[in-house]
Length: 342
Ligand code: GLA
Image 1 (cartoon, rainbow, N blue to C red):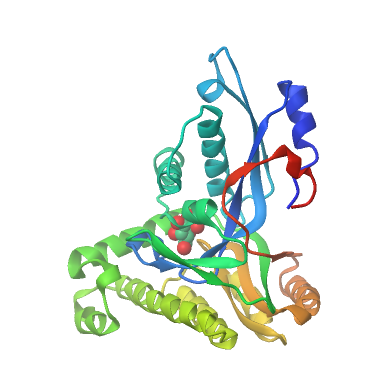
Image 2 (image 1 turned 180 degrees about the vertical axis):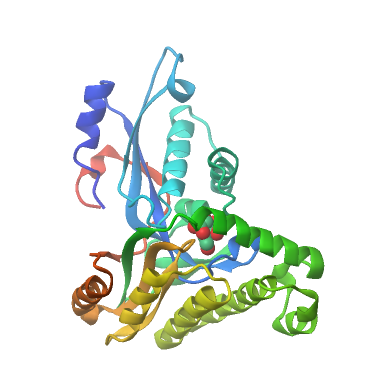
């Protein structure tokens, strides 16, 4: 990871002086989608795209957030479902805190940034994105329990790469449908109790009490939580193939039961599924566009990138951006001495 070359000169030009630097990463979610806001399980990793904030103190306190000069530079592709907004919230909050010699526990920082997203942006997101931006760990995904906010780091296999394919579309209905899914889950919880406590057996027994599509939404939430547990266990047992199968199942559940996929995401996962060296593939993030994540044996990555890009272009006329990522550490201050590659 490298400090963006233009950041310091741009800061000097705008404000003068030498700033302190902060960065917070975007994320990719490996499995556990649309479960955070019902207190379920998720398994994201921080990625090597960050939002950078260069911050300097001001003495006059007249303007700009608590007497600070901030220059913000984002690398996380906006609107792609890789949490550019969580990265900007976390990097900015961290910069403002440190700039004012204030300290917050990282969990409080994550919760505060989630509140910014909920109350200011008006997006009723769960805690996943802000949490992983704060707590990410190099070469690991985190299995996070969104109810207790406890987590365990799960090492990612060295022989496989995280490949993110961007559909280059984001459908208009993403935000309204996100609200609707939350409402469906809340409606279900009023009838049969918290989804996190629901087993598949109970759900099947109580199914007649639930209207469609609420029943299907619940089935996704319940089966997805089970898949996250199984997926984490399979990685810990070095069974990457099993992990990949859970990714594929997760995509089908999001497509058929939760209904948050779209044609472009399905095309990308289907193309990926036909290629050699691919363990698994699924949509990642809120859905209705954005990105897929595939776990690909490293020696096959180059072929994978070429084939997916040309297959997707043939079917949609669009050229997808493809990012080969490594899991990164969470938000932190970056020393100016780290000008070299770190
Ligand atoms: C968005 C939200 C997250 C989460 C995902 C779906 O990224 O910000 O809180 O709900 O969608 O898993």
